[in-house]
Amino acid sequence: MKRALITGITGQDGLYLSELLLSKGYEVYGLIRGQNNPKAELVRSVVPDVKLLNGDITDLSSLIRAFSEAQPDEVYNLGAISFVAYSWENARLTSDVTGIGVLNVLEATRLYAGQDLSKVRFYQASSSEMFGKVQDVPQRESTLLWPRSPYGVAKVYGHYMTINYRESYGMHASSGILFNHESPRRGPEFVTRKITQAVARIALGLQDGIALGNLDAKRDWGFAGDYVEAMWLMLQQEQADDYVVATGETHSIREFLEVAFAHVGIDDWEGKVTQDPRFFRPAEVDLLIGDPTKAREQLGWQPKVGFDDLVRMMLDSDLAQQKELAGR
Image (cartoon, rainbow, N blue to C red; front, side, top):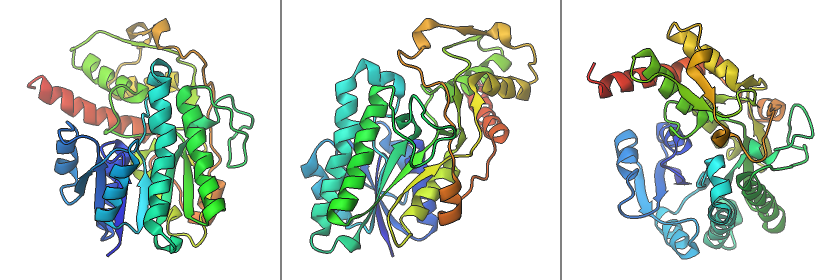
């Protein structure tokens, strides 16, 4: 039985990855920060077979203890402060967690492996936000990185540190450069879930409108449940490498709104959406679209859920949730 250790297990990716690994017969350990973490109960309810360990990716000693207990064959570092807007408010904390945290998990992996570096494989959750002010369209593994947020800068640090550990120590360390991936499990602070939650409430007569930032920003959106399969496939390869994981399509926030409102039968939606300067980024990323050719050809991976189906899936989930909350 293979054993896996996942940091960031309370996020959407951590939950979907846990489900995938458990279905493949893995023994799964999840790192969770704080004994009274409010999200611990979520993990226990969704994936009760996961064994939770206390630890913090900013604390190397706690990671060493977690590795000693989990004895993992595979390590998936998904832990990060992942809300981009927050990174401008607290660039230092974002750097410590999303950047230096990667170094700590890499070092804990190296120390755990000792002289036998082949006994453990490492996955780093890199991000399309690293491309920022894009230098190629579409973006691929060789595209110059030009981050436009403290979050993106921290992700670049973690990405290059992963490559450095691979090249310096011969570690089986791979990075997945994941483009935007969403699901009903996405946090409500993210724009996609903010939209589906609001549209559900508007359709049910529970609120009148929604305030957003740049409606013309374009992203390559896929389903998180598809993307965790790519993570697993990377660690099954003989050689470690870096892969863009994307759909190869781009859609604007405006298109996301159109699909969401159409799904609840609202065609004239413009009057229900306002643009608020508070939600504009200090340095905008205008266009992200990934080239997943390498992942398709080398991993045999391709996304299964399309853009429209993803929006409708999220909205159906929020409709059911809002109806339950409203007692309908």
